[in-house]
Image 1 (cartoon, one colour):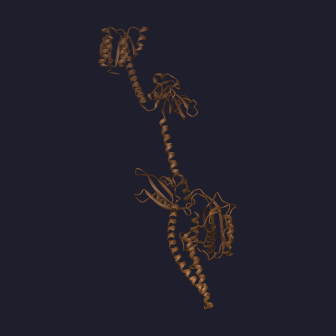
Image 2 (tube, rainbow, N blue to C red; image 1 turned 45 degrees about the horizontal axis):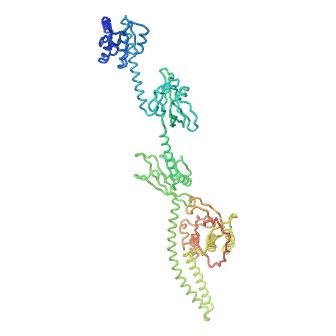
Image 3 (tube, rainbow, N blue to C red; image 1 turned 60 degrees about the horizontal axis):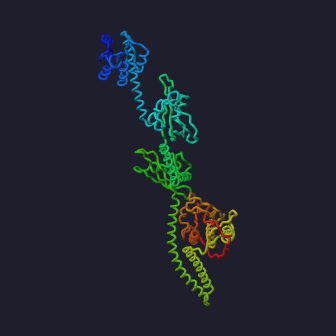
Length: 632
């Protein structure tokens, strides 16, 4: 190191001058020459030289060794001793001050130069190493994770403050101790001791992680859940000289994960309990999430599931959903599902900033709402028509009473010819038919049930199906299908018989060329409104009346139960039969529905609440005199 500043401490002036001249020739600068230890300390403080050439034996109260010790401690300046004495005791004292070299008097300039350069270089390297160590130590102390370094014998060489806090050990007490004494870890679930990660690193020579559920037992016995990583420390030749262990307290992390899982569970429960189907899809149209209702609705609408592309709903609806009109992030389409099912699909864009990341599709089963709305409209229409019909029927009955009454009085007139009497009887007969028709109208308007009691529907049907043969021609086959059980309902047998007659006559008229009239009775349990949305869950008895006739046109299905509506020719039906049946079933807290297509089978399904706690005793169904025929 040329131009190095060197302080010479020598009490022999001739030797001091000799050293001074030699140093100048070698290219060094002599900052000062002093003769005592006290002066040496003072000059070092004033000039801060790069190196001190210190004679061991000096004048004054302190010798060179004592002065060197203070200079080394206070100023960290390298010392090279100059001495004519080489006794063991002198060297032992001098060694404590950690000198950078010894020069025995007399010496040559070459020896002086070599010793000085080696001292300056060694001090420079030590200073750099110390700065690096201080930087590393400061860094390790300031990071948030706990750090423990060990030697290759698994003894603690360093602990940062976080490691001290977590383990309960301070570095001063832990240095040199076996790591397993400081870092005591067990499996949280099994309570068994876990192998030290340092041991595994030293054995395998690679970085390793702790097993899950690792718990650190601190010095005072506290248990802390942790995770960590251990990595080997290597020298410049690649040899492992120790291990660095980095670990952290994951208590808050676990709590956060627990809170997140609880929140996810609450969200999942909420999501699954929502009646509407909720589906999340990505920008490729693939389903990435669906709640229970969403999966059920998808099964009805498509054959896709989570992970599949939402393409089976239909290209046009899908395009409308995923590519709504400009400026809108909320869109809705209506999709016809299976028979009698209607779904509303609503889409909400998921945007991160201005970027679309997906969609939320909400599938809502609007079948029941639409059915209820349709039924409400029908009921309002029926009520209005019924009120009007009742008034007309009462006035019509009054007129008929007068017509029939005066006609019967005329029968007693002896002056009337046979031809007149025949015509008069015809008037009376037609009046009576009109009176029966008027009574039907009043029955429909009132729709009252005289008395309801427990009725086993199977023997009731067996008996009354026989009576249908009076109204059904021979070229129509009548069958009754059932399983031998008891089918108990709460009903008025007379009214139920009227419904059966009305449906049978409609079936007869639909099969002029012959066919099959099939009556079927079954027990069903409706768990949810998924497949029969207009019927509440529970136990039901279903009475089905089917024919193989001409079917009902789709445009007539909406009005099929309205009074006076008929698809028959004028004069061949009043249009009150199905309206009367609808009213009777409604009074029995039941439901009636129809499925049909032109040219195919027509089926009327009647759902009546089943009685589980039945009463066996039932009255006999009274005999009836059929006057006229209810018509569709």
